[in-house]
Structure formats: structure tokens, C-alpha cells
Image 1 (cartoon, rainbow, N blue to C red):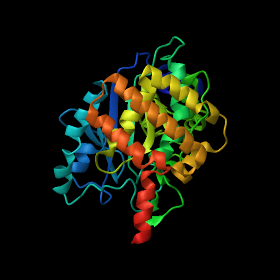
Image 2: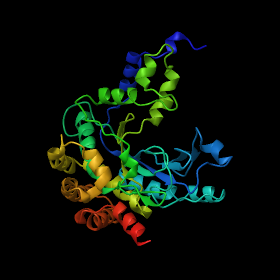
Image 3: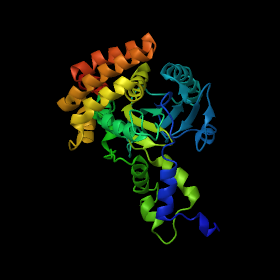
Image 4: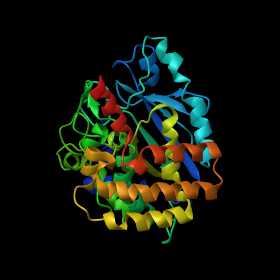
Length: 354
């Protein structure tokens, strides 16, 4: 029987969650995760034994199972955007032979077939950045928390790419984001994160963590870590900032959200411009839902996206990011953002033709 001292009270859980939410650090390191949507659910043994509850080492990062349909390639924190992208580029092809050897292919789509939650049958791209410093200012962690939430609906609209379920339109440009919620941040990001985690449902429990702490037999300290792993909002505080607003993009398109998000938060002038460009959006009702449903078909989001993507490109140039990566951002901006489209529109166009 576990000692009583290991049982979490509501206040104890709140303190633990808030205490580990954001570790002060100046921007510079960049991490990325890219989901791989598998052609069939269920991983055969011994692959399941390797990935379930564990990780398989790749050249730079790791491969793990996120759900029965989704594996994830996680890159290490890297000193700069180019290094992060180069490492992920080397790691991403490595799991393909591992899966194909078991008769499983990696799909190019961001969504396919049935899914019961926002993440169990859809694929995305996540970007990890430093939390920021305690002091107020451009790179203060409170300002970065606010900016990340302000950017989230615009970037979710621009990178929407999961409009189908079982091959049919869902009515959403991003079915992946449709069932998720974006909080309205306050000036206290650690308290924001603690409240979000406490009010999130516990997997298989039918109640929130907060409700569990108020029950007769509350959770143990050891229950907190697996619960945190299931809490997947668009913006998370995992010691660092985790930005999960982009659906998986076609081909090597995953590089674009990584580059754009890193530029808008980490490049000083682009970050200032991003704050100004998103200021008119704050307080607008239903913006996250509009992003998931309409993508850049929403004129308010489309207008903001045009300014943000130009600012991101200019920020990448000031950072001296590789020409290849800047060209990828420019091509995406021209093909989608400047035309009020997102990758989901291409998917829907093909679905109508077929």
C-alpha cells in the first residue's frame, strides 16, 4: 500500500504542476516532433513492446508510439533552427523500413479513417522552444506564453490539413483541431497550465484530475506524469513551450511550421511584429473554432496570416537561416497564405474530383 504522503491533494497537485511548468531560459534552442500516421491500427510485437511506454533510438532523436495509429519522431533540442531541421530530416526516414517490415506503411495524410479524439487518428507537427526569462520584456516567459496563444488560431488555420474522415469531408479544414480548445491566457502562465491540467479528463477515468483529487482515494504522485502526457492542448508548458497548432504537411512541408513558429517567437523584430499583428484578434469570440472549420477561408485569420508569414520570412533572413528553408516558407506563403488557402483545400479539391 502506498504511503499517505504520496497521495495528491488538489493544492499539492497544483503546486507540482505549476512548479514544473516553465523553466526560465533564453530563446535559442529549437525542438520538433513529427507524427507518422500509420496505415493500420495496432503495432505488431515486438514493435509494440519497443514503442509502447518506451522509445526507439534514432540517429539524433527517438521514435515512440502516441496512439495505435500514430507514431512520433522526436528530435532533440538543437542549437538553432537549421540544426533542428537537419536532424529531423535525417531521422524521419529511419522508421519507414521498421514499419514496412511488419506490413505497415506511413501515410502522407494528416488524417485517415475513424478517430475518437483530437489526436489518436490524426498527425501533426509540434515545435518546442525555450520558455523565456522571468523578467518582463520581449523574451519574458509571460509575454511568450501570451504570444503563443495569440498566434495559435492563425497558424492552425494556415496549416490546416485534416479535412477528411473515412475519405469524406468532415465540414472542418482541420478535424484534428476541431475537438480541442485554446485557453485564454492570463499574466500567470504557470497557474494557467496547472488549471488546464487539473481540469483535463483522466484517461479511462471518466473524471478530471481535479475531481480525482477531491475523491476519497485521490491520485498518487506517480499518477501525475502519465496524466500530463495525455494533456495535449495547442500550447503546452512542459518546462519549455510546446506549440502544437500545425497538422502534418505534405512531403517535407513539416519544415514550414517549424520555421515559421520559431521565427515568430524567437526572432526579436518578428516577435514584436507578431504581437502587433495579433493584437486585433484578442478577445474575438470563437476564433479557434473558426480556424479549425474555415482555415484561411476566414477573412480575419487570412489577413493576419499574410502579415505574420511575411514577418516570419523576414525574421528567418535576419537570422541567417538557410536559403532552402526560407524558400520553402516563401513557396508555402505564395501557394496558400496569399491566396487565402490552406493545404486542406487541396485535399478537398482532390476529394471532389475523385
